[in-house]
Image 1: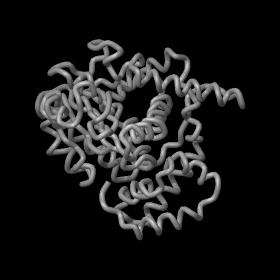
Image 2: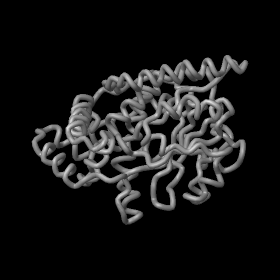
Image 3: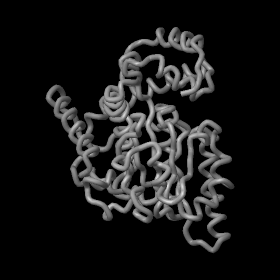
Image 4: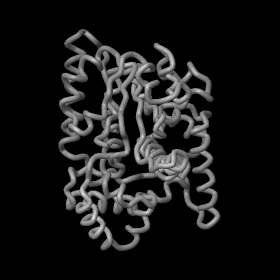
Length: 337
């Protein structure tokens, strides 16, 4: 996680000791008993500036309280048909674990359409997966490996990347802003696979120079489906389905539910779905609540992030047009974490 001084940790903890309820209650869901590691994540996100890291964490806790994030895992997306539609158009899943015990999240960037529900449902689903990762997946991985696991690996499948998907760059900016400000330093490495020519050509020229150095160091663009490189850090069984053979891609119809980690029938999504359902039943037994989309206040994106999104969209359009291509690339889901 990088070197964070013990003095900075002590200063940070002294400041956090002064916060009042209900911030202390929601902070427990953030640190999960690992205070030093949590302070370290926020310090790293703010270049070890204690004052800025403290403000970031307090803002995060206020956001959680104001939006009732502690209870988001008790608020299912219903009916089931709607949730299945979200899963079929927001492609993400847990494919397995690395040999070091890190969870491996697969993301179908190119084929995610985000067209089966309103923005609020996609934001709700994304936050639910974040919270389930932090409260269930990472603690379980830590227990299994015998050491504290604080980060995950993300494998981004670029199959089907098209210019038409640029219309989703606003939603992707919302999601990445939420992650940057409230779930910092949760990704160890991003592996980009099945990248079409347009992405490979633009990566070095357009995207990479716009990213912060600490984010650039985490990104690796692999050749083809990336199978050979990924097998150096994980077993075959943990490979995302789109990495198991060249040209497999992240098509929802090419794999059965047991192997396709994007599918609602995959064991990860079944466990997540059942967890949310159980939490909902427990909450409703105490106090019934109205179902519906979960509206979350979205923190305003930093001017720098907004400019990056505009630059990517503009440059990819120009690149595509300049090469006689009618379609190019969508907003890249790489956060500053």
